[in-house]
Length: 395
Ligand code: GLA
Image (cartoon, rainbow, N blue to C red; front, side, top):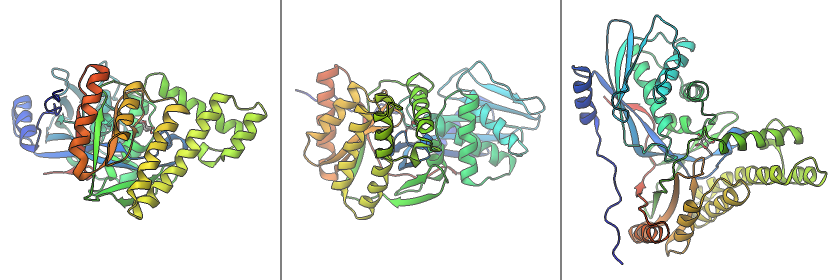
């Protein structure tokens, strides 16, 4: 059978292209460009809102924001991904939600920055992004962080990284109505090239763990099954975790043990479903810490086993996978040279990641695409990524 041709449907984008687009949108030159990356999580899924640990990397797909000052006390946001849906804020008026869903992200960020005491300055901002939307790669976090950085730069202000991440998370929780945890914004702000970020989601303490073995390649495979974390499954899982923590008498599931959960199950205090949710979260937190040890020991075989275990737990205990994600992981597992694979992000669609020996990366990519095509009759875009740098002022 013939392999489908290139699956890389993403448009090239760079600082010059976003400057050009700024000029055609606002009729003058941009003063500067900021960038903020999307992410994949290597392991530690659905642990952030349980005060646990996560281990994401920033990816090479990013949101760029070109900006220039204006002197009428207004801020305008436009996006090449949302043509004709630009919005404006009058800095003298209270910032309120707007009917256009995308604009709630940058508007929410503007509101949170002003609440944090930043004196915002008038400016125009144009965003462009090659982070696929609703693919579970944190396009929204990258938009929030790019918006924050553009507004801060225009205002001549700075904020500590953890505060910036929290403020962007609040914008998403309160303004865009998505009850996400702290992982996505943290990695977009704090990512470091060649490193994964071990984040303690309770203390917000971070450690950068080298993730740059030239013998390995990380593939990202997009099921193209779209999921919005404001939809039912994510808030329901969060709720079940909070209910379980209350039953177990702990502040968050991070503080619970599996034997505590089992005793509560046997005593009829935890339902079977709640027990399975606990088993995922407690096991996943332990796997994340073990995965860091494996990376530090250059043991990609062990790291890969933990990825498979994470996927199985998300599929069976947490029930946030889907047929397409399972099929990609299964196809990867059947290929020579694969260390491990798992769904990444919130789930119910989105992307899977595959860690593979560099000399086998292309063959594995082709095999997954072919098997996906046979099973689902459509394309599964796959790209390779390194661990990229976090948000910055590009120029
Ligand atoms: C989404 C949320 C994150 C995190 C993951 C699951 O990506 O935005 O905060 O909860 O799901 O690990």
